[in-house]
Amino acid sequence: MNNDIQFLKDLQHELQTQENDWQAAPRYWSIMDYKWEVTESGHEDRVVLYDSDDCETIELDDYLKEILEGDRRDEFSEDEIEELESEKEYGTPSDIYNWIESYDDNSRFYPIYEREVSIIAQNTMFLTKEEAKNHLELNHYHYSPKAHTYAMTAWRAPKVERLIKILENFDWDSIGNKEELSK
Image (cartoon, rainbow, N blue to C red; front, top):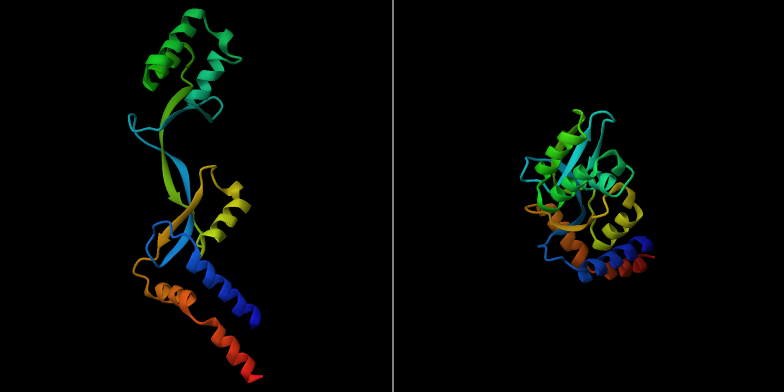
């Protein structure tokens, strides 16, 4: 019993002294992560190319590096390379895709427009920010490199609010004293 009371006292101290990340009480922490979602042209954060021969995608920037700086440069004439460099410098992703269709497509590359969206990682709920940080550190391989802790409010959750208030304000020493008196 004493170990449990000490745990609650330590938790209480942590709840009272931790950062609140500007989040209203009752607060808890989760993991905010990011994923790529298909969107319309003009609303994208990036363009990937779907290679129908390999059934894989490649980011447009990586594709450009392959041709302009990599092993595939010698597959194209100097005029074609100059045109691609110009499209990269001054054009749009659509202009680059038009170049691909003209010189490297063979009906195998298709552009996919994606935007990065934030998501709350499923099955993550922590009473303290430190516990959320530790979880992320120990389980980083389940998340993107941009994942981070994220404070949330248990809005209109009266039982959660009452529980957290009890954890933050209860006099845990009073239980310890009664336990010693009963011996």
